[in-house]
Every structure is written in structure tokens, then in C-alpha cells.
Length: 370
Image 1 (cartoon, helix red, strand yellow):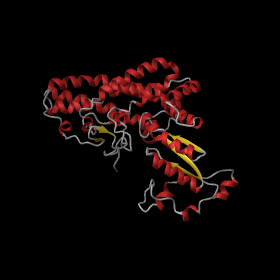
Image 2 (cartoon, one colour):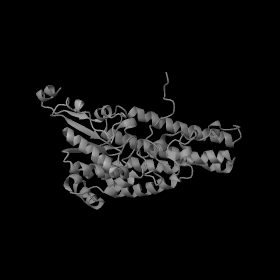
Image 3 (cartoon, rainbow, N blue to C red):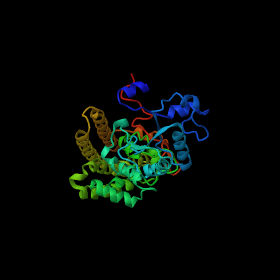
Image 4 (cartoon, helix red, strand yellow):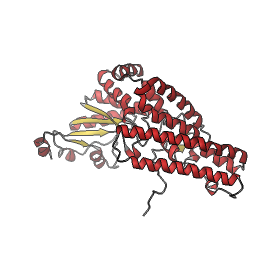
């Protein structure tokens, strides 16, 4: 392998998780008590680099120890977070909390390369442009002896790109909700599941009880509306987050309200809920159009068909929810079984969200089970 790489003028870089997992008696990657097996390490070409990827760890001692282990073996590379995992945004608060101690260890052990990772998994809804502030943060770390302050970062970012760091932090509010569990390893991604979840079946309604996320998304929509106006044409990548915040302002707590109002037989409140569906459907269509425009501007058209299916399915389910509510309120339907079903907790522990990173249809049937 090494000879073939050299013959073609290439360098080898290997992700190290398998090496450390095989070496650990517990078979785990991040085992602070164990190093890599010397016998396996001896088989790694001297010219090869080991990539230490770690997107979620925030313990400085663990990050320092893992970085030292990679340095001791040979050439090291650090792959860190620009946390856009299965989401519409980069969660910058979690990104900075993870990258800060990791990049300090990178400099301590003179790791020659460090880069931030964006993901396009499960729909690729997050625009790469939303990662620019994180890219600047990694770059600034190379030019500061200590961590780059938020003030220094914002100033350099404006000088290098002409863009405002605050816009990106406002977009991050789509997932950086005030009820995030900051101690949990995985940040929550409510912007995704709140958008795509079914309005009647409410898979995540049990998580949302009492959180008031409609108010949070209302404030976020206001901030992003001001950002869009300030940015002008340069802020084209803010359109999807802005329209998403407007949708979530209407949709985030709608399912919870439907379930509670139905449970208590409050038809007057249900009538008000039903009246929101028309506006919500219109907002979803505006989001769909903005997202399609962004996708065609920056991505191959192949793949958008999956997003069309999601948006089309969401719009159809909203129409069906409005239709069934109307039937029930008119007395043509004796009950709505979807609203009678109990709600279970999936992404909440106590008063906080953030039990895991959820895919669009996690825990539900796919479009084809055959």
C-alpha cells in the first residue's frame, strides 16, 4: 500500500478508531486507560498519518491524552467538529466547546494538521456556507498562542469574508435551544425533527411538553429576519434558516397543543389550532421554495428528489390534519385516534433535550418496507 501511494505521489492517512478499538480490552475507541497495540502500530507505514476524529468529547484530559497517543505513534491529524450532523445548521455553541480544548492539545503536541468536519448525512440540509465561521475558528487557532476569543474571531471573520459572525450564531439557535442538555455528549437537533414530524402522530410531542419552543423560534425568526435584511444579497444562505424558524414558530408546539386540547375536549381551542394550518402550510411552501433555490445554487440536482418527497409528504400530512380536525369539529368524525395515542419521550431527560442525534424517520417505517 505504501509503495503504491508513493508511486502515485500520494500520502496515506488512516482513521485511527479501529486501531484503538482493537487495542482496548473494552473494545472502545476513546479508552483513556489503554494505548494502541504496539504490534499493530509496527505494521503501519512510517509515512502514514493517523487521523484522530472526535466530534463530541469536551474533557480536556481525554483530548490531551488521545492527542499524545497519536503523536507518540507517528504522524497525527486531528479531525474535529463543525457540528451539522443531521441538521439544518451548525451548532456553534457545542462546536466551540469541543474544538477549543482539542485545538489546544493540537498545538501542545504540534499536530501538523487539524480540520473541521461538516456532514451531509440524512438529507444534507445544512448549507456549507454556514460552516464558514467554524472554518475561520480553526484558522484563527493556528495564529493564536491561546484560544481565539469570540471578539477576535468576529473581527477577523469580518475582515476575511465581509460577513457578520452574529448571523451564524443566530442560525445556530435553530438547534441551540435554551433547554439543551449541555452535559450530554450529543447535542439535540430539534430543528430537524420538529419540522419533519407528523402533525397528528407527534412522535416528539412527549419531549416538548412545557418547553415553549414556539416562543424560542419566534425570537429566532425575528433575529434572522433582521440578519437577512442587513446582509442583502450576501446573505442568500440565511434564507432557509429564516424560513425554517418561521415554520417552527408555528409548528414547534402545535402538536402538543392539539394533543392536550383534544385530550381535554376543548373544541374551541382546537378550532383555533385548526385555523393555524393554513398559514403553516403556506410557510412550509415558502421554506420548500427557498431550500430548493439554495440546493440548485450549490449542489447537484441529484438528491433533491428525496427532499421533494419530504416536503411533499409534510404538506400532505398538514392538509390531512386540517381535514380531519375539520371533520371532528363539524361532528362528522366521532374521534381522532392519532390524538388519542399516548406520547412518549425520545430526546429528553428531565427538563433538558439532547439524548441523541435523531434521523428523520428514526423509529418509524420507511417509505417501502418490502
